[in-house]
Image 1: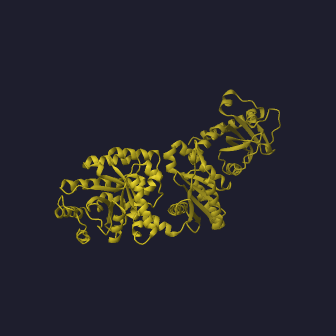
Image 2 (image 1 turned 60 degrees about the vertical axis):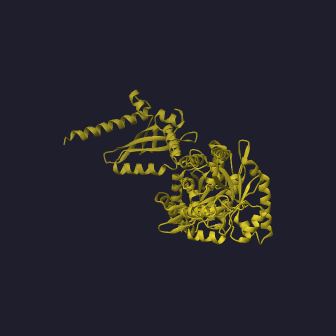
Image 3 (image 1 turned 90 degrees about the vertical axis):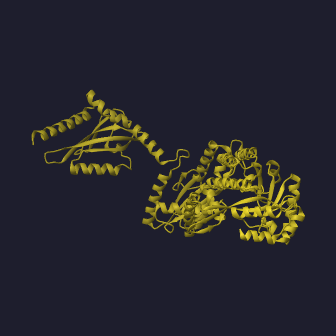
Length: 599
């Protein structure tokens, strides 16, 4: 190794240090050196004196003639420790200092600098002087902070995003573990936000979200953290709350703030929220666990009718886990042929003919057996599976009705139930495609909807109604009388059938109130020119009284249970053979029951 090289490097370093020192003393720099740095400084350790170049003084807000002592060049409190660590390491290991820090200016504000420093040592190896350069990086740090803010905050509301919230929650858990204190995580979901978006548009929806975010934030303390997790979901971190009533008081404050009307354009919109609460440490000791538990509690709150809050309980998570499992099974059922349709006959009171069939979905899972529609239909609505599921039902029902017709069996109508979740433009294409693919007469297709679909309708829903009517399909209101009955929607929407809910039929022969409701429905239907179908007819007495009241059609176990497609075909064939055209049809419950059982 050439020993002259280290010596040359040391000499060069000494020359640069002395040059900087002279510049600080004289405050004069040659043009090339002046362009490479913004400020120079020197610290005489023995006399504890600081010298700064003119440019450094200018950056700190001091004129050339003003005194500038060491005590006046103050570091930001958050930077003092890491600067001191760097200085100690430099003196110990003689490693050059290079770091970023903030210095207080004359006006009291802090400015960001990137600094480099090097000590000068005496012959005994003791530091006698430190000299360095600084560059103003305030603009760079502002840009950096803007980028960091964007990375950790929601662009719409300005609230912390999921990443930052989880970071704050993790730190809160660490503090709680050290102090033994609890904390709470709130999962806040706006009820019916999708409808607001659909009716008023995305711009109004964004305005609504911003208002909601501000109201949640203003309901909390400064030390609490609120974030927009996703869409219309917000999360809140509360520290220092030890009792459930105290947490509930904060929740009620949020709900009250959000219950005030929000003006969107010329209209006022009211919103409610469903809130789930998870508490550390009893509900979990990790960020993922606490957030998952709060989410599960929020889902439970929605099941209780929304506009309320629920604390997490282990049973809630079990139900959520089952829902995930059932969703996966339902997705597979669509692909693996586990679904089937059964058909319940609708019989006319006038001539006792089977005039229609109601398509009813059945699911026979290979592992769980028969699963009730009451369990998997709400799950399909929540997960969006209702769209492919509804398409399968509609196409299968239309195809089956046309197959019976092509086999020479009596031509009947087909009734298919629709969920309110299906009412968007996709439904129009699905119905149109099913009719085109099967060649089924659209006038014989009756789509069954609930009263809630009509009550909660908006311009987009009405457009779907009009498009389906243009295709030739008809509408029936299912479970009539159990929802928000209103003459207005009967006048406004061209439905052709009212399906009297079975709860009124069951009490028809024993309850004067149920009898009055049924009679009023018959009068109402005749006034609007509508047909009435009685659901759930189970006894001969119910059947006779409904006929006397003028009901048009009925279905129920007194007549027929839902049948497989093959059994229904046998029934239609038996009707054709036993009662050829021109002969009056007689009701024979015993014969029909035997056919139903054999099917």
